[in-house]
Image (cartoon, rainbow, N blue to C red):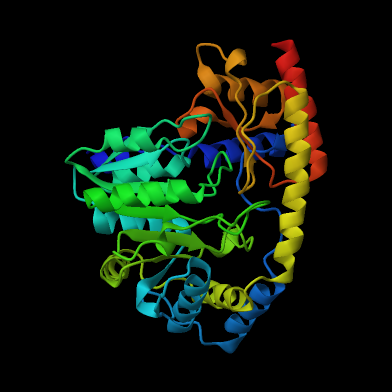
Length: 385
C-alpha cells in the first residue's frame, strides 16, 4: 500500500517540530528557553473571551454557513473597507478555520497542477508545502539588500506557467514591512502578466514605527488581489483558530464551495469571539501587547548587536532574523540550531526553513527574562564555537 504523492514527501512544519522538541526536553527536566514559536504570550481580548463564553451559554452552537456567519463577514467587510481603503461587501469575505486554512483554500481555488507560484524569500515555512499540496510548483526568489523583496528577480522568474505571487508583509521571519512603492511594483507585475496576488497580512496591525503596512488591495481595482488575515497574531487568539480570505466574489465563492466539502462551517464559538474583537476595532489589550513587543524588540536587537550579529531591523511582526553565516559548518543553519538546543537549551528556527540558510529566526513572543537568557546562551554558544 502506498501513500498519495501529495503527502509522501510532505514535511512537518519546522517551527511546530522545534517547539514540540523544546517542550519535550523541558518536560524531561531540561532548562529550555524556547524562542522558536510564533505565538503571542498574551491572553485574547476580554471582549472576545466574553463573547465566546456567551455563545457557548446561549445553547445555539450549531452548524453554520461554510462561508462563515453573515454578521462576522459583514464586520470584516466593514473593517477591510476602512483599513484597505476599498469597498468590501460580505460576499467578498469567506471566514476560515485559520489564516493557514484561508491560504490553502485560496491556493487550491486558483491553481492548476503544474502552475508556478512566485514566493519572495525569506518566506514562512508553510508556503512552499501549501503550494505543493495544491499541485503547483513553488519558485523562491531571493531578496536584495538583506531581506528586501527582489522586484527584478520576481520579473525574471515569471514564465508562461506562472499563475500567482504570494507576498507577506509584515514578513515572517524577518519582520520586514514592504514599502508602498514595493507593493505597487508587485501589483503592477501581477496585472501586467495576469497573475493572482495572494497577500498574507496576518501581522498587519503589528507595526512598531513609521507608516502602517500597505495592502495591494488598496490599489487594486482590477480584482487581482486576495487578502488573508485572521485573529491569531494581532488579537492573540491562536487557539481559537479563526481567519478569513477576502477578494473578488468569484474566488471567494470558490473557496467557500471548496470548504463546504472539505471542512464545513468554521467554529461558531471562535466566530463569535472574533466578531466581538473586530467590532471593537482596537481592543485595549492590543496597545499593551504592541508596547511589550516594541520593548522586547529593542532589547533583542541591542543584544544581537553586542554579539556582533548583523540583523535586519524588523519594523513589524515579532521576529528577528540575524545572519549567523560566519558560524556555520557544512550542516548549515539546521545543524547550528540542533547544536544550540542540545548544548545551551535554546530553541530557535534555522533560516533554511525560510529559504535563507545563513540566518536564524528568534521570536520575541516571550518575556524579557527569557530574551536576556536567550542572548546569554547564544553568546556562550558563539564564543565556544
